Image (cartoon, rainbow, N blue to C red; front, side, top):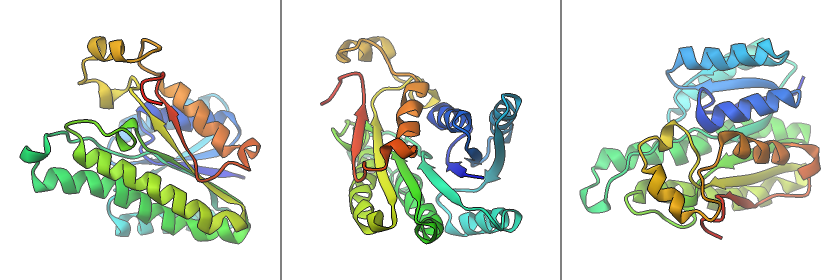
Length: 242
């Protein structure tokens, strides 16, 4: 069975990606931090539609938790490996840099950047051994354009884009691809505090995107049809920034 691990999969873009990959026939491992009820709902919805899904709880910013959770998963699946990794988990904690507290900077970097490093390093060996893998990093318009009030988030996401380009070259010979998707404004819990009415005026397509639209792009990059695409960052932003 082919397994896909999606971090931050209990809601928003992560949930939509998990649902889409399950529709494609992958057994989905739903990575989540603390919202057990929401994660269970995603799992149950996938199973009710004939898919395969299971939960895996860990803090993406803590390498010891990642190691413990994945070791336990591998004990239960000795013949399997995660062939698709979607690094979706991330947090915002916005503030103007002059007012930004140390913990605001560190927390966002730990989750959105360091978490990518810890879990990707942990799962990469099996992909290389099996000579097949897909790593898709969910970054952001913020990491390309930069957004005021998001120096921490912009820094983290820009760093992941740089790491995507470097890692893609390291692992290509083993038929592992590494790509990033950079959503603009997507209607999720993470953007619920933004002024959608005003921001829509800036978007040529005149609306926020849907999580399912991002999921469709991730699913394509995870597929065999995208085997010759690697090291890329694909924007999905309604024309807001090109």
